[in-house]
Image 1 (cartoon, rainbow, N blue to C red):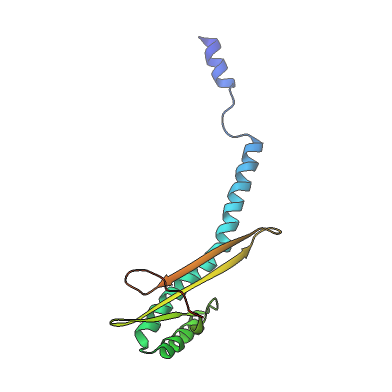
Image 2: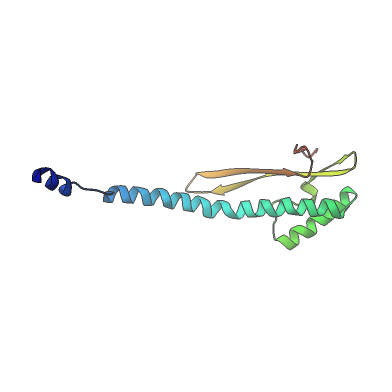
Length: 131
């Protein structure tokens, strides 16, 4: 009985030094990704808010583009401009859509490509800009 008790006390518990280093590397990589991605997500949310405001403040394509450009100045984002919006007339007004991508360099030749899109359409279908 005493031997079993001593054997349980001598067993190691917890994480090894190598395991700790490995976990810190993983946590560091996830934190680095979060730090690099969060500004683009904040910019995306600002753009979504700006297209809603622009849609409400304009009745023509040019008015909506101008209102969006003013919102871009206020919101300090430059990923897209009013001319990049896809504005389509629907039955009772206009639907404003956008799509863009952000390339985030990580380490060396590795990079992360994020593709953002949004719309004011009720059905949620993003219309592509015709060129």
